Length: 253
Ligand code: CIR
Image (tube, rainbow, N blue to C red):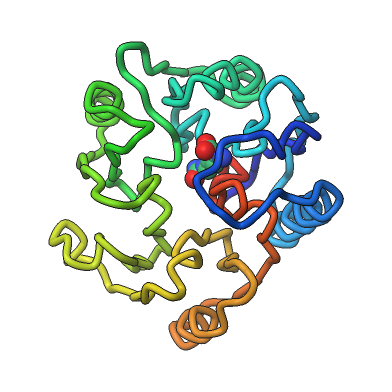
């Protein structure tokens, strides 16, 4: 059960953020509408929303997920792997501090983005990516193991972040795409498989009684509904243009 989320309004500088996509320049007005819809959907799922104001200094700072890893018992402030994003953590720390007494920090030369961390009950998966190095992954693994969790490190082959291609929906069920389909680490889970053409929808989030997915993926919606989930589908085009997905836009705890 999630009770809280932290989100951050995108600033006008968002359009100058990092991207590898060739989907075009985001439309700022449309982006704000999509962000408001996202916040509205989270509220519908029954959580209290902490809404941080935009920070023009950090174009990608609406993707708050990368700045922290939050569990029921403690928080970890990350050390984001992109230079232009590293300073985003300074604004997240005070927001996180209002909810947590126990706060760990990933330290250089370790780098870690929250998008590379997936929690499935008492087990964590930590991706090694362009943004998360082995040292950062090992620091987080040590913190998690000290706190009684199991943590597996997963070197990525193609995905940008770990959660680009995987989501946990509770009930021992994983949504999986691409390189994770053949990874035996995930064989213990019931699998909802997302084919290549629907890959963007593998980045979905379980929020209490709902699963939130990007709009435009009817096959994913149908698969989830067949498995008994209530689905909310949200337009995400302006976030996709900057390599962002649904999970990236919030810290959920
Ligand atoms: C970046 O390149 O850092 C942003 N444009 C997108 C970050 C997406 N975050 C995520 O997948 N957790």
